[in-house]
Length: 85
Image 1 (cartoon, rainbow, N blue to C red):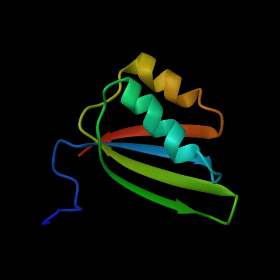
Image 2: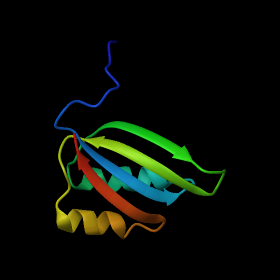
Image 3: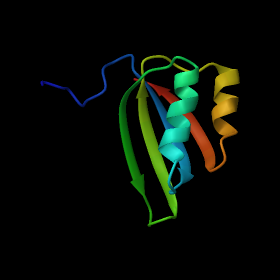
């Protein structure tokens, strides 16, 4: 399989400041899936075990304002940003 891990131009990045705890990736993925938004890439990192973390997701399309509000309402997510490459 030949996979390019560098996001393509036009990709939207969803940057999330969140808790580092089990289920955070799944919750966000479930919400995005309910909006029919595909995740094309993902990177996660943390400051310390069970501390704060950062998720950067490549998305095929940007969530609208209402969808962003629903993402921000997920317990354990503190700040989100959308960046278009």
